[in-house]
Image (cartoon, rainbow over all chains, first blue to last red):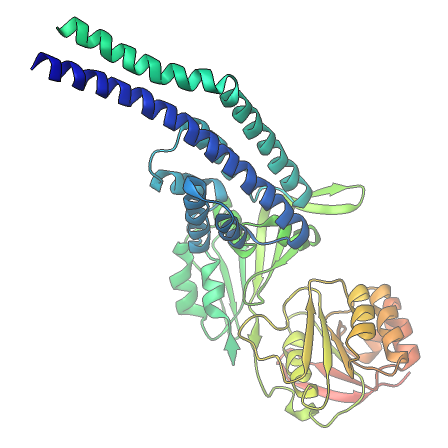
Length: 168
Length: 275
């Protein structure tokens, strides 16, 4: 019985460590997706001056994961024409989206505040600025990435082992 | 009569929609919104005010929804207007932002004037057999654009018509365009006239509201190339037109064969253009 309990504790704590590492990888991927979307939006705006609802819908088609859902949701909010501005539409979309990391949410909120606020040149500059911020965040996450991911997993299993020893 | 009414209602704040719909569905010509005052509905037979006062959020909401939250797609805001879906023109007044190149935008919007676009097919039937170039004259709100729209449709039954629609008001989605009409929207008249002349081989070129010497020069260039012209201008009569220096070259050149003068009751009369 004790052995089974110990195994369960180690497995649970290890699982937490593994999921933390997976969340780290997911966040990196989402930030990469967001940078891709920002790049796409900049090009689309510069060449076609696409209105925002269509722009979000098209941007959703070129990406995947959470960013795709958020872009689709934002396009839908904008098409409904209920909110007075884009930041409110973005807030409503984020509220409907399940669990996004605070880092990603912060960047998306900023995107909501800046979209539809400026003329073309201002809008392009703001997208570039946000892209740079996302790039910095991605760089932070990638710093000693392998060691960090290994640490999460090791810490999980070690914490599990320690708990198991304590309980036994 | 056709009107993109649903599109008009969709850009208004929710509290305004039902009353505007009830009071103005068939007769509304203009909706005037001034910050802190109740909206004014100017209908064909009467004017009325709604109860609740307009807030800054209401004005911003209208601008955002009319531009589809896309200031870059509504570059005309710097010129004090934007065209909403359905071809309704929204005039904007407030605190202007000006740089070295002129007015670039409006920071604090205080008033909006929404002019409802309506289409009356058959309005220009009396002019069906008039060939050559026609200049439509009238005061603001007399129906110059509405008459031009129908005239374009009728002309397109005879041959190709190229329309340079700078403001995107002439043929919004849902309005019949005519059999042989090519429309270039969002392009300044001067550039657009030269482009369509070179690329579309039109029999007729149509433009709405010639207001500058450059517009007149571009029209003259097209007229001298043997293209018929359809255009509108702000003037109450031919003598009024003659008195305005900007239209001098047009009057002198006799490039227009006929003028159509619109009256405030929407009736019109046609006469030959004399120098």
